[in-house]
Image 1 (spheres, helix red, strand yellow):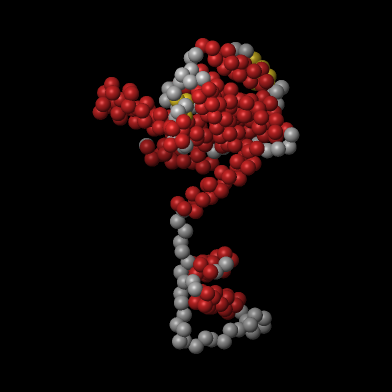
Image 2 (cartoon, one colour):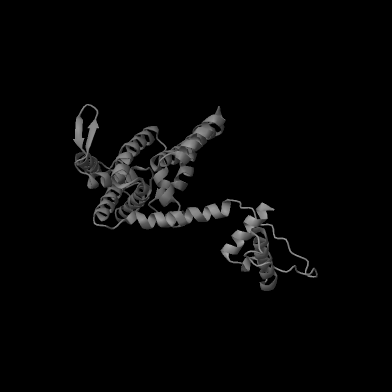
Length: 308
């Protein structure tokens, strides 16, 4: 059964939308830490309560300069990290609802960029205010709320009159939903309850608004992010994806070369192909190795070796 579930998850990840992939990544982080806590509880008892948070904070955004410098990955991991069940479920519902709306409005290719950039803005807002007003925002921040606030504000800025059908309320314009969630964070600041989270939410919301306005003005901030992301993914694929090396067969230098046939009436495709292989092998011997070949020559030799 577990194999079937795993195969279904992989299929959803590779065939699903960006929103589906983001939800699955958040789910993976959530399940990892909850199951780790369960395992620690079985062996450590009540001590697991504090120990799990000590480990969780290695992936959360800190307000401490030294921890931020020595744990730079927390800028990314913190925006996928949830520990409380309610926090995770509500964030994923918001991500699904508003992510689908934003995908229809600006295109699915911009969703990941808006999510990441808004999450980074939220982390920076939290870190900045935590150091301006020390002791007021808490030592750590985690969760996808800032990234999701960016998606909500981007959608509301792009189509403020878009109608949402809310349970028990009816149709509501998207701009009023955005104003409500932003206003809720603002009026919650003086309560000193999750103040760091509210600051992060407002930072993410500001970034979502900014990106949407820039897109409307003809500047797409997600484009450069997508270019960088594609290069990073391409690098990892080149490192971790094994590609069979072409088989290179060296000819005996003492063996006389057969006269090369010219293309045309006296030549055939097989003879022309062999002549090109011979020329590439000669180049390898004369210029010091396989690495001196052009990309086109390497690809031709690779295909030829597979056909042998």
